[in-house]
Image (cartoon, rainbow, N blue to C red; front, side, top):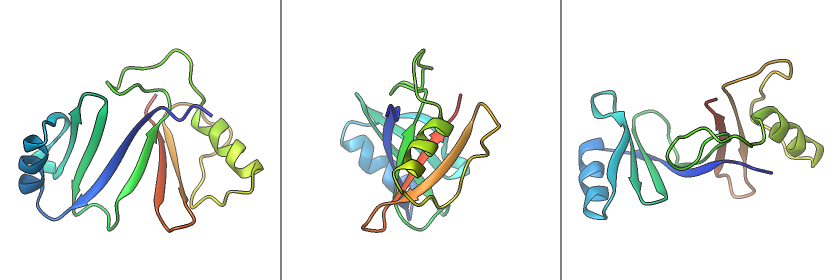
Length: 123
């Protein structure tokens, strides 16, 4: 399965303090809007999303169709294909993408330790 670019989405208490901390580690703002309480920070191929007040726990995120620069890949597994493969393997989905659709869509699974995994396609 080609899951695309990987990032971790962190639920932060103070977006400004978190931005400053990750900048100290060498990350730079890649996307997002601090006034809307979310930023995507990047250090080489590492991506960290900072989200204040949007969700409770941290989320592992995969973006089918994107590389680490958010450039569209020519060859990738569509989110609906990934969803079906996981269902065929007996993985329980928290929510599902409608089968007869195309383009941007997302679904979530929970790993055995309770961690949320978001498969979030933007293309």
